[in-house]
Length: 342
Ligand SMILES: [Mg+2]
Image (cartoon, rainbow, N blue to C red; front, side, top):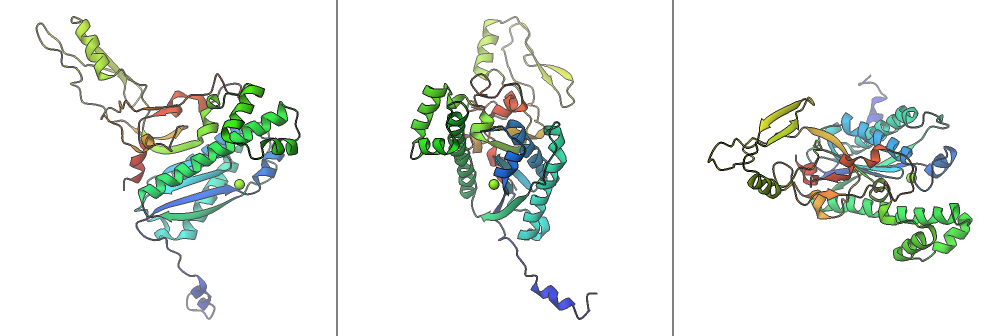
């Protein structure tokens, strides 16, 4: 049909390439999610299962486009995906990339719905829109993600106090809106604390920080610092110290970290550090500060600048357990810069 008299219409399909050598960020956003969340009775102000479903849909995008998408950040009904500068997906055609990501995300959201809401049938098809914005520098990208996380914080604080006024304070939604009109963040915190005993800083990190997905080294429980270890070795000169590590297959593997004989000096950490396995990590940590964007200080990932979040398990308003409280989601060494590696 290529040579038919109709083929000229093809000329109306204009090219839409994204500028080369730029970082592409695609943000998808739920359409009409106010109604959608009402219809499905999502918990207010935050429904952790609904957030987890969003995270699962985003993990699907990151796995399908592994090698192209290096990082994602999500809050509420939106998710942003960062593509590598060198990405050649669809020859960098804007609409092709954007619609593909929106489609991957939406179909995964529907596909995984029963896993997160086994008791609730999906009442209507959810829809998302999407846009792609190219950013020329790394600073633009880190500022972009800081902007989204700051937005998470502002929205979460407002929603938390708003729903406390309604659910616990007996106000109508319009009365709560009126109460909060023109209030500063410190005033909102004061209302939460004095009237409802909510300590904002102890709310679950997933609500305060949103969710960051990044390909990075597998989480390892924090080890003692080298200084601590050296001190311990010095105080127990006859002890043979062993470090037990789980290897990649999850089997226990032992190796001596200190081959010490009579009169020999202690030489700890002679063994070659194990290269960590790269996994898709789900994090609820601060990405506004510089620390997230730094590489770990030592090759063994024992940065003293490790980011550690309060889980919010003890002071939050969410009952029960969930993966969002897991230790491996609440701490990481600086790992963000690897998202720029091409
Ligand atoms: Mg929306």
